[in-house]
Length: 417
Length: 154
Image 1 (cartoon, rainbow over the protein chains, first blue to last red):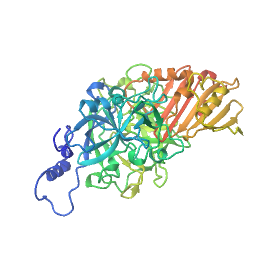
Image 2: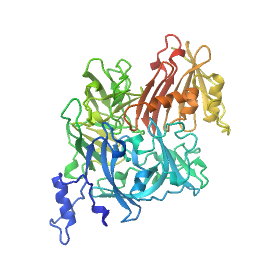
Image 3: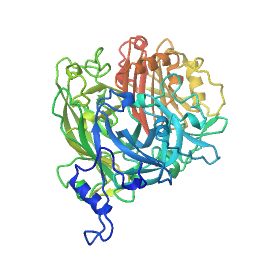
Image 4: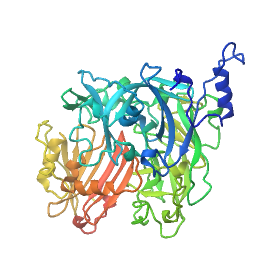
């Protein structure tokens, strides 16, 4: 790691972005800036890559990854570029696998709760839960910095506290690189904190954050907003009102080996993240982060989100066959493919627009072995949520507008496309 | 259908019960297991009666809303949940919890699995959502009352 982590770019390189590289060159020089007038904006673009995942856990499908520069809080030397961090528009906050940090010789010091006990979190991803302490880090993405960012260190055996009985017992913990097919999760959803006000002062603390004694006894604890696991983009000095996720259309209906896109910080803050004034659908969300989707002619919608952390269109339709064999067990295997489907998205609150989305499901048995990006992948899911996963991102720019942060004509929380 | 709603006036005592998932099994259990669940979750209960089944609603302190459905034989054949944090599925699924986790482990492709549907002849579990809004339903197909569809269990 170089001595100036703030200027380090991802190993994937930002050079393909002409504007970003020009700005980098400008900022990297010494002496008088080349341009007069307003200060040059910071580089705000990092590369997104969809590939097979970290070496230790290859085999991912439809996972979009970024490289995150992480430093121990206040350190200029205890820093590393951590690759294959899963971009997740459905959660908030950065979570890193402890063994990956340790391999980079980064030791993050856990925070304490109000009683002086180690602050730990049991975060649930539905398919499993993750356990570990909350610690401060300085995080750099392109030219942006989030200092003293509370992050979760997942599966940190050095903190001494095992998870309480209610957290992921009996095989439902997904703590490690192989469980996530990622070295961490970068949650850049619509909120600043993962829990928010609900975890600050209820009479009985929610079973999410815990204070753990040195002896390893843990009890649910209330946590101020400033100590909760936090969306790093919300802490940037600028470009902190949302993100734009852009991925190209895929070349093959049966899967592409790998694709690259961009994660742009800020909405309507720089020329590269403008929000179009027409032709865009802005879907406001409720206080939980959901808009509504009415699937297949349903009279009323169910909770819905646009989620890069989900590898498929995930929803419940018992009339569509589910793959019982092959490499996609549990995903949809329509009898006649492609299966054309439709749903209506409607925003909540001030941004209550509607938009009809036509989409299709492929038969995963026709997918090419070794490909990692699939445009028409559907997954059987819960009946109470419609999850517009990664297939929805291909060929679109998806805007994630943060809660209470104005961006042009709109104020979050919203998803837009 | 016309539902009669009976408020049981259940207590919120905050009892410190010893935790024994097997003894507190809800799915497949009887009404006593629901009382035990309500005590564990320090919740209040409301009972609704429909022609085909009884619904007990447990509103817990964590804004968790649990519905437990009993059939004519008194067997809890379904449980649904909705709330800002993930419920303790060991408590709600009882003796079926192991089958659920075994099935989760067989899913292809690692990831966060934010929306899952586990279906077997014995048990169906649908679970989805994210922090601030989780939703789910688990039911025993063989114990569903005649004519009752899973889609009405909410």
